[in-house]
Image (cartoon, rainbow, N blue to C red; front, side):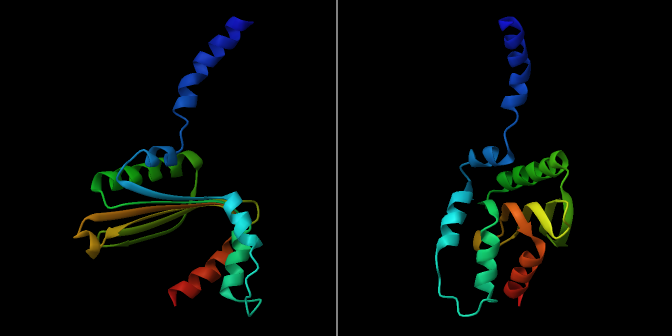
Length: 168
């Protein structure tokens, strides 16, 4: 019995080792900055009682949405090699998780890709994965890239409403 268990463990070991998420790989790069906010942080934030004047304010919408988030991850770099790696990892993640392309914007050297994992209810998604690559004057023309990942019970209508206020 021990031999069978050992054989199974040895067989599964490569899959467990290679089962790293893209985020584990990104955190190893010195040229990639990261911010990770966990569910616990969102729960603490949602308990703050801010004196919001209107119940329908944008701040209130953000706090309602934050309450349903599990995790927020942001990775950014100005390194060209890291940018290419980030794009490659995003492409692999989209294929392996079978994410749906929500939006793609390309303007010159700049690109924005947004993917989602849909749930049974079309108004909600369980994951949003965004990749942004562009040229920034602050980086003297070097490529700048960012990955933003949201997971949880994300209401697309609230997300759209919040995005509309920031784009106006």
